Image (cartoon, rainbow, N blue to C red; front, side, top):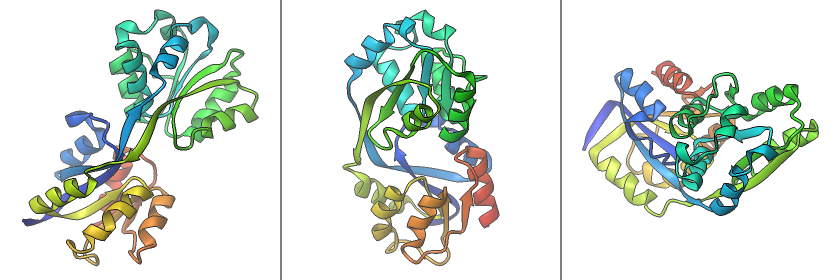
Length: 254
């Protein structure tokens, strides 16, 4: 086991199976950090037959909203990739939240999101409300915060067709995976994307790391509050959930 001064351990809510294409890993690796990730939740698809039935009827919709990479992957699973997606969807706007979502929508579904991407749900809702779609927007979603985008748009009079396409459950091997990572290196920086990552890992981490010397980085204030609930000072918080902002937060904590 070694103490890695440039070692970053990231707890992500879900493993998006992006491998070397994970933009957070890529951005930090380019900055000279050694990066390991541990997923704290596991994804299970559902209602893919229902989703495919809706995707087979593009004429009923004014476009679609893709709020995270899992929604893109669910569509790819439902239709069998870009070739199975009716061409009419490429004539309609595909609204996306986050750079990773936009990248996957282009790669897996061949959708153009260059003019319809936004950094977060609130700003995306504002963009959509200005366009005032007369037809409902297809809104695949997960089981957590299922109605967030739906509620924002409904308030503004934009109809949506929401379908739950995945659910998340605690990862069955999170403790095993974390212990394996700690056997390789003791991280100097620990990054949390969600409160679930904090609560799942801290009981193990507090026995393995120097809590005072470790740099604790949060993505957003809610996650930061979860870190502080253990009496830990948040070293830095990313201004936005983007690879560039995370890299800047880590650099500022040094």
